Length: 232
Image 1: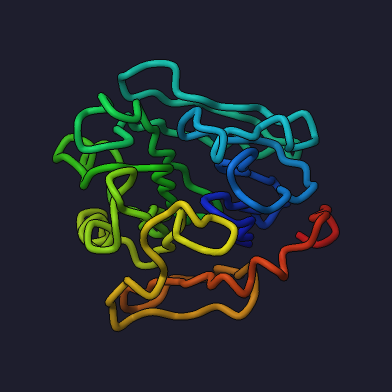
Image 2: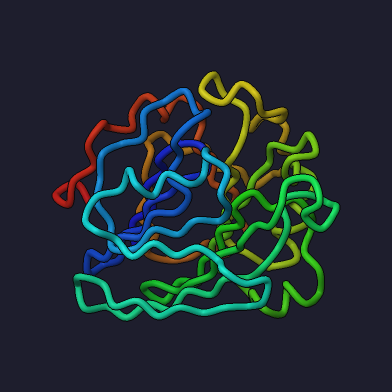
């Protein structure tokens, strides 16, 4: 499986067979143009413009947005004839059950035997029911921006522990492209941090001890304008 960081909270996952899943493509607010690419599936965690740019993704993808406050699941057959099930776990964008910033969806799915949870703009640590619905995950993607909009670095570490993730990836952090966000990657205090030198990583196996994969601001400049199928 290849994990491609697209900037802000957006990630492209590519399976061994070539199925492509994009999560939370950004549109307005982020001071960077979203790369040109195609996908089989686009997952949207919520409708704020920095997470809701599905129209920017080519390939006529299936776009999934949560339409209910209850646990939902969707099955999608990709162009590579893979059937992938996506679980939409309801959550909130704040600590006030959505009264400030609305609902948020945690997307959970498995590809190439690896279980992934992308938390969108999660605004609170997980409740027991959500932990049960999500289950143990291998790769966790969650925000660290804090400031009342999303969880911050301390809550990120708590969610890591709640879901027992072996690889965790902080997103939605302050950079020169996202200057309105409060916290930076430097605010994460954890011994198992691995700073990546490029905007993508190939995950073939899981580490023996939990790791945090850091995509520093420097890799944003390495993200190409076009990410075609030959690259992935």
